[in-house]
Length: 244
Image (tube, rainbow, N blue to C red; front, top):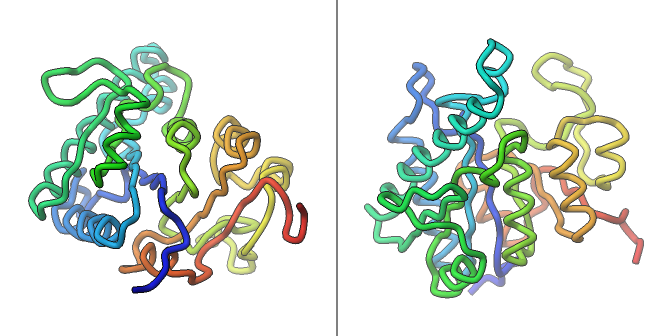
């Protein structure tokens, strides 16, 4: 059996990763593919925590810019992440993968409250733990929530799944000469304002020594190949290569 490089990971998906090309908020085919890849990780003995954004349904910050109260709009965005979490839960259960949705907001009729010790227990039991509703507070992104949950569950690695190969010096869709960074530090990402994650998320990872891997989620099988040791995407760490 191939040795996996991580025992426990936190996977951060954007809500847009679930969208269909036709514009639907949740594409069943994409959902099923992602669920199958997550189950494959679990079958290999990897414990998987998952955070999904809500941008395919509603972005709180965008609604606030349109005139809606920021606190209200952020709470609406949190509820959007619960919808995505429930969709992923259903897709995983359809392929017999045990899973629990844990919400930072109390919605007991549809999911559990987030309790750190219970979350860790779910992971130890081989269940996927989907963390919904962000941090439960306005003004914080799901990137920050993913970093926080990664720290709380003692994840070996935080993976941010994107639609590009990793972290670039500029937007590769707009700049053909953009350079892909294979490795950099959190301080470099912050200083250069590379837009990997918001500053709160990066600082949380840096200060708690949680490595971050940014990679393309739309390449089938990529996460398993990463777990098997292939150097995919961009790795961001607290210290540079060769530092102790």
